[in-house]
Image (cartoon, rainbow, N blue to C red; front, side, top):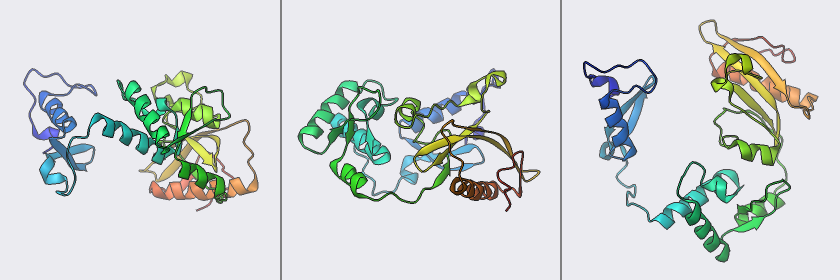
Length: 258
C-alpha cells in the first residue's frame, strides 16, 4: 500500500512538505524499524510492504554487534572512497566517534589498515587498505573520462573532503535565495579525470524536448583543450538523449550536434 491509501483525520492540516498525516508517519517509522520495506514506486509514491515479502529469504537479518557495525562503516567507506579520515567514516552518524577510533586502532594493529599523509592542510590521518594503496601506486593511469556529477554524488557529498583533496568548493544552491546564487539552482560539477573543471546548471524541458543550459562556470585552473572539448561534446549529447531531449539550447558548447 501507499500512503495515499490511508485517509487522514478530518482535522489534519497538510499542504507542506513535511505535514505528514499520522498514517504516513507510522509507515515511515515502521520502515525505519525494518518492519516494512519499499517494494517499488509509483511515480513519487513509495509502495510499502511487509519486510518478509520483500527481503530475500537468504539474507542474514541478525542484528550485528556494535563493533561489527563500526567495522562495516569503515570497510564501506574505504570501498567507496579508497581512503578516508575517521571523521569521514562516521559522517552523519552521531555517537560513534570513540568506537570508530577504537576499531581503527585495532585494524591498524592487525595491519588491515595503514595511515598515509596527504598533501593538504588537514592534520587528520587518512586510512587506507595496503592493497588499495599498492594498486594505486602500480596501476597505470587510465584514459581520462568526463563525468557530470549529481550534487549528491559520493565524491562531493562531503564538501570539506572535496575542498581538501580536490581544491573544489561546491555549494548546492537550490537552498540559496535566487538573487544570491552564483551558478544556479541545481549546478552539476564537471569532472575531467581527477580535476573538477567547473559547474553546469541545466534543466530538461521534456515537453519541448530541449535540454536548456542556463549557465556554465569554469574553474580558474581549467584548461579547455581539444581533448576536453571533444569529451564534453560527447557527454552533453549523451545527457541530452538520456533526458529524452532532441536539442540543446542556451550554450554553444563548441557546436554540439547530435
